[in-house]
Length: 209
Image 1 (tube, rainbow, N blue to C red):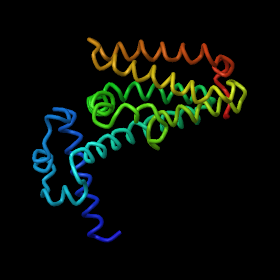
Image 2: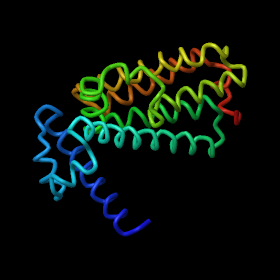
Image 3: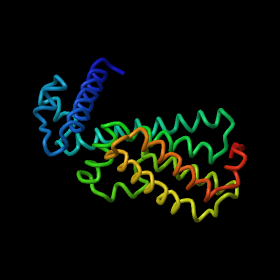
């Protein structure tokens, strides 16, 4: 990569980081591009070189937060696999990581609250985003179907249902008087929900499907 390209990438990261901080603190409507430029320490021309408008910059901020949550869920699932857990155990680990991430202000404000309002609710119910945690959930359920723990035609509907449950749990965490305690209760409830539907592997915790 050339020095100019590296500088361009750095400028873009500064803008996205500044946008995440300000959108988290004040929301989309109350955050101006002037404040974002000032916080990022770049020129307005640099902003428009990378993003045509505030909406596109919000989308980039949303995707950055989404990517981070996705990576954390994927790492938790990989660690569960290394520990010898099967596909259901890995899915539960990823779901637990998702709930933990949803304790954080940027996730709550940008992904859960502002995202559907700014980008449209349709985006929250599709599998098109490559770094949406829903993709990991569906992959786990596809794995469960391959192992015979689930009918193949149930993987995608169940992914929607479980992701919806996780999303609602995350919203509850955002308004809970004791978020940490609520997160533990939600984690137990999610585990009970999954193991009641997919009990075979959960009983042993084994398998590498």
